Image 1 (cartoon, rainbow, N blue to C red):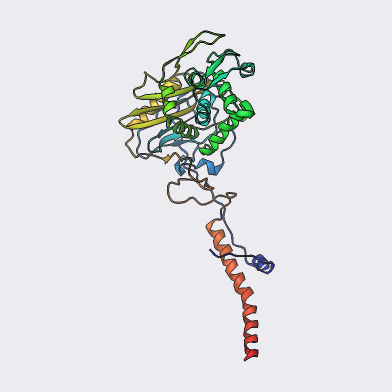
Image 2: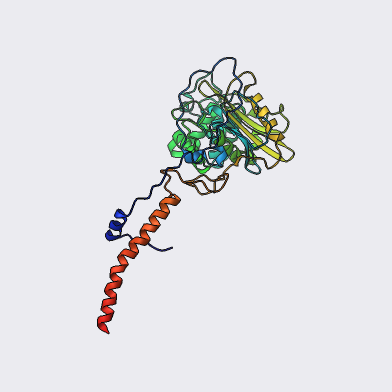
Length: 401
């Protein structure tokens, strides 16, 4: 590629060239809006803060059809189920195809499904046989009425037992301990930062962790698409799948407390055929949330949903309805795909539906009209600058003859 170096003279020529009008992109990357099928809950949910707007570039990650706050389903697909969830997504974890979604990239509050991000970020770092001691600070800011594993200050537990407590009983106490240990010298804050680093690595652009447990925190959000990326990362691990498939685990006795048993709660294990595991969540702000994976006829589907209500179906009933819908689709039916961590970050959508999407203002790339205008200006400037030198050179050549 030529190395163009602009001199003051060249720039002066560019400044007097006629301006070329470049029209801003209108609706670039936006899919047609189709309202998501919805069922009205018996009682309206409490008011929640308005989530931040989605970056237009991030909205199209995975495909142009996903760039919508409404419904994205394959052409000719059966009607998607009507739900209370405000966003959801169904994806094939084997092929990476996104089968459908509702507001897939919109910001939502995660609740305890955030614990999957904790697992994705720290499970590769921590030795499951390591014994750690629980501190009073690990438990100080926890509501006794919240989901707890049941560890006590001064008690020593293996990392594996803490993962079981995190994933089987949604232990917020286990989350705090794991984040502190995994955060090294930075403690719990370091564990949370590791979660955000992992989100960036996965290209989970709408995800930001403020707490390791998913308890509500400032600026803490995720999206249905991001949760599918996180689910793919966690369910790819054999140890994670083993924890998620465990229904009962026994926590060994410690000098200050007896042994106790924890039971996997609130998942579709044993209730929906082919379920490999799942994670529920709930806070007043997030409402009901769910991430789960089921396998049937060689297809491994993940379902993620956010903002569901307890009635009429609840998050588990709505997840089952989405899985039924997804398994009914023919192989290859999709509206996009899950991007992989090793893909380069793009300033334009990773997978457009038809060709490359034109860059939008502020994306750092130059549109075709702008490029042509600048290219023409450069060529004209070079010619104008070269002409006097060519004439001078001709006169000098004549003088030497």
